[in-house]
Length: 608
Image (cartoon, one colour):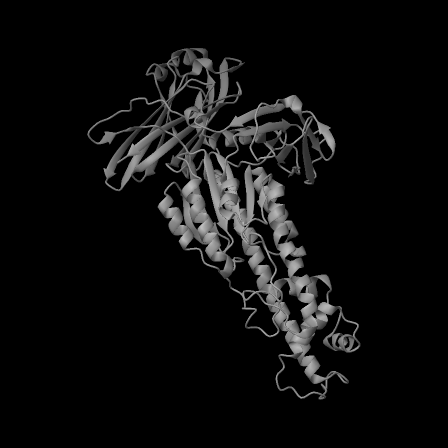
């Protein structure tokens, strides 16, 4: 269960702010106010598709000043009407937008509250280091580039975490550069598979994929061992299979040539042993390669999900030399891209091989076919494998509107570019015309009416839902976006206070009290009742913006006129959290169902 679905696991308390209510509430079967737990099940809606666009000049600088009329947006080649247009600008304004009021909280010798400016970080960068596919020769330059980048690229509103495709969390989101540098120093190449240098024959994942998945030579169904040997003897086999077979034959050692196998008459036993060895080593290489690719894709999916609960700009930087995706992994790749798009996570990728140069015959860190028949094939194999490895990095970046940095030895500058926050981001919104709920992929294209000397960085597409979105689902989506945003909204008058009680040095009870003025609510009159429903989410974040805990509650009101009049001073909504000492930001979001209005408030609290 992720952070968002964990919200709403406790019911809160409603405290009435006037004692007269107790005398005015009639004894009826239907209570006038009820408070109940409501599970949070956020899901993505595409009634309105948001398309972030960055426009850069030839020097790579993002530019502002464009208007909605300057953009043309196409969905599957069809021109769409842009119904929403906004410009997001980075800078000090982001911090000012979430500056909180500093109301005085209740204090006593055992109850206290310290005012703290509740500034949530507004940019989160998850560095996913591909330690599974990172070679020893790439390790030093990877560490050096990341160290130099970390020293240059951060401000007080940025948090970073460093993770690995093998599943090791080197450090979670933090602003502590010392922790980040220490995490970089712990990066090591990781592998659970066989060492191609020690195997004979030496078969790489790429070669294994070609032999088994592409040509079906070794899948055990299309050709038997005997048939393959006959093909090789008649020189009808593909050159790649012939090279691998020759390599396997050279590993037979003191095999007696000319001896035949009793179960396969006419087939040389040494040839059959070579074929069996080739089949076994190839299967092993394919199994471990598939496992490592699955781990890398799983790590991408998990980090995208982790980022989705962060209240700000979300950037995943994949630091990798690239890796192979076989046909069995295509759907998993699409799932990762889909999840990132839905969570507003941009995946930027960097090829840590830099300006990649192929070494004739391969380098010491990778397997190669060593026989004479393979010498003319190896360069082509290496080029094809390197191209496919880079393709996945390009796909991840292009699919989420990110950038792929490659063929450049300026790795530190590349990391700086990928982690940088564009000065201007245009957000275009549109409602798809005649949208079919079939779960298909919709390619997006954005152009400018005057695009001379300008480059556009844009989300590549989205996935259509498989069912229509009802109003309740749309409301949940809107609530999700507000909860995990640092911005304050004041459409409903809400006063927010906090207090804490420390029964012991290592734990505290934090109470959050929200005072709501009911006069601004849009009640719906039915018979003698004034009806409205308030949905309130109280979220708790640590000083790095990590989600700690949350409570969602629904308050249903069916008030008589005299009760509503008695509540002119409002009602208090109180929630309690058990926390450790530290600095926190309380995020309160209230939604009025009848008036379709929302308020969102932040308050900082420091518990010594």
